[in-house]
Length: 419
Ligand SMILES: Nc1nc2c(ncn2[C@@H]2O[C@H](COP(=O)(O)OP(=O)(O)OP(=O)(O)O)[C@@H](O)[C@H]2O)c(=O)[nH]1
Ligand SMILES: [Mg+2]
Image (cartoon, rainbow, N blue to C red; front, top):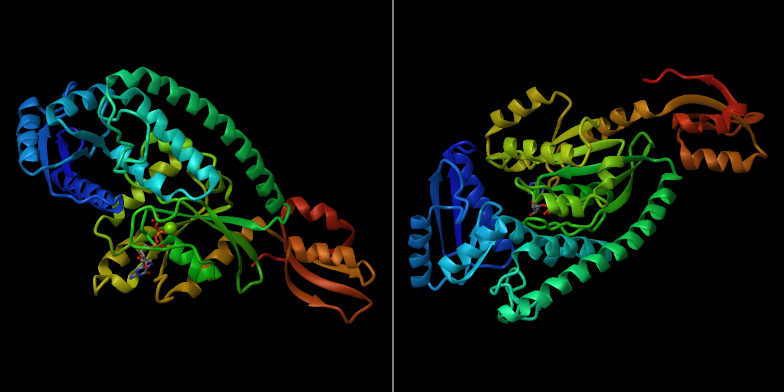
């Protein structure tokens, strides 16, 4: 496969488009393709018909024919017309960054909801782009982007089938989502604080969740290893319980349709009390990656949430400590750690404890021993930091969500200072 990038004068400096193209190459490899070359063009604005200039397209096409390339991938989203025209010029399959990312997601989806969401996003992206090269909707032939081999006559039937399928998936998704929201409500009955791990793809989110909770989420050196959210309980040294959710990673130029399709999954992020933003400080583009993540958070309506910055992979800094101190200066409450060696984990736990504390009230209670139900309930919903069973009543010091305080009002002895 051959990659094509552009340096738009309005948008990029050279460095940006190089990085973006390098990442496109990583995406292609993740999708299982072999990259045989790439080319870029400097442009003032994209060309309406062929995205890059016609002359440049012809030049790349000649090169691709001689190198026997069967797929060309553009680093930016192409309009349906641009895709069609480019397929004529290149005389092979032409994909854009969006369809490549969609393809990776499709390979990765495991849960029913994940599969439905990604198929919906794929079909919506595909519909206006159905051409002879995409052809009949069969995946048996493999390859990236649902390639088939049937002719134009199939097109109209295919369009109708895609539309039917879109309608069907939307209905199925509705059902799956209702079930999931019931599950979420059940979890919230526990009234544990909710924290979501967010961050750029490959930053080490799953590794961190595994390290903290002993979960066994797949963590690997590939983009988008995780798609479906996993939630585990973490008990902090302070006895506070927090539900930690690991979820899909973000990437620059994340297709908007995909964000839309994954909105329901990403609701975990929107509903969290605290975001744990994991960044790979050993990555040369760490700063851009943090900004891309912030942009996606904004898009899903999670901006401005209390956020704990985690600067991961410090074991890989190779003496380049100034990068880290730069970040820590900008994010004074940030935590530097290595999710693989465990260095820095204690400070993360301490930070989590202190950031989650303000969402609990600290009270002292006296509960008659025979009220076992109340005592059990207290342990279920509150963080009990001290208990004495030896007096006439059982005595507790506990941190409790403000909205549950009322339930225990008859037993409250006094307010305690929140440290
Ligand atoms: N050296 C080093 N490698 C790490 C560290 N944390 C994670 N990794 C590696 O980074 C790669 C990606 O880790 P993951 O935990 O899968 O990253 P992720 O953020 O969950 O990625 P996606 O699910 O793909 O978005 C894996 O190969 C990890 O072993 C770290 O602290 N140091
Ligand atoms: Mg992951």
